[in-house]
Length: 171
Length: 299
Image (cartoon, rainbow over all chains, first blue to last red; front, top):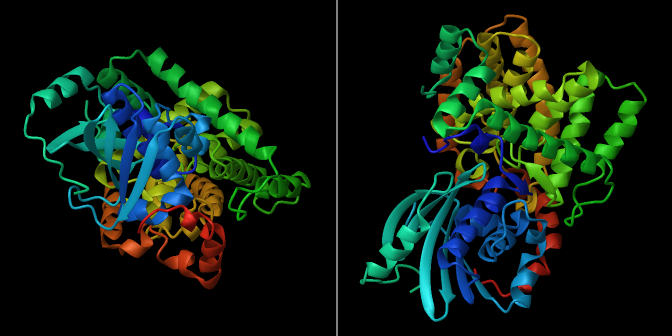
């Protein structure tokens, strides 16, 4: 039961055009922003499957970058987020791939974000209707539904104590 | 309380002698700890956003950046105002409101996903047509949103609501089924009648593939939203007439899931099949993305 509330169905309030390819992706980007606690200096973004095929039409690229810049799903600045990133000197690199081997769903994205020389890898899946889940943080499989409360501080400290960081992606 | 199936939902309604909307309100309150008033207030905020999206869409003649959508809400309004619409004012108002919402969505305007952005025109289109033609209050429409959310909640957890996972049947199909139930309850029908309308609406859209031209949520998405409103009203009328679906609602949802799982990847929001791969569809894609492909993305 991943959908938990009437507001998972009626909502989110969001800028178009797609709840899964735009709003759900903003939330994944925003999760990374919240986890870092700031706008990253640099981000490598890998879109898989349906995301890779249709990201331009759905504004998926603008959505993920908007989230990384701290925007919410209904922020009308999302349509210009790529320019905002450039303006703020955030380096963004996109990769497009086929099926995601880390998670079986057509709407998956993996982000490697860098801040002050430290890199964090986050995998997210957009389940539909704007609901998203984080399935990967660094080399750890996680299961964080973004419609459920989660403890950011705990996630950060957990990450700092896991010494065996081996990047799974992008290598 | 748990709502894992339509059957279970109906059982709750009958045991408590409450509507689907009221049961969903109790369920949400129990799960979230919010009071009914808070939930109503949050839902009303979404209703207002829906109205704003309709108003924006009805006053905007511009085309979307792609050049393949926009302006049809106004054309439909001009036609409807002549009073000659064959489908009558309730359906034709719903159609122009759906146009307005979905065109606004295509312009990256603010909308409310119901249950998705690609299918965001149907439920607001139907509800605000009832407001416009039958004078249903906003308070009533909020209850309609609760009814619709209950149906969507079951579908989303038993099957899917995204085109990438299950095709357009999962988006426009689900939205139409949700709207049909909301219309029935607003019109005074029973929970059982509402879910019969749900089953009938969803059956009419089973197998619908997701084949957006150039991957944009415009062609055929916008007009499928528009037509979805007419199916929702037709299914609601059947439900209110006491007509039953021979296949129970939960089984229809199960069939939708099976069909979606068997749908080839090319027809699940990849823009690699169907209308997207027609000669015109390909031409549109080429025209729209010829500049953008030089942005340095690797493939």
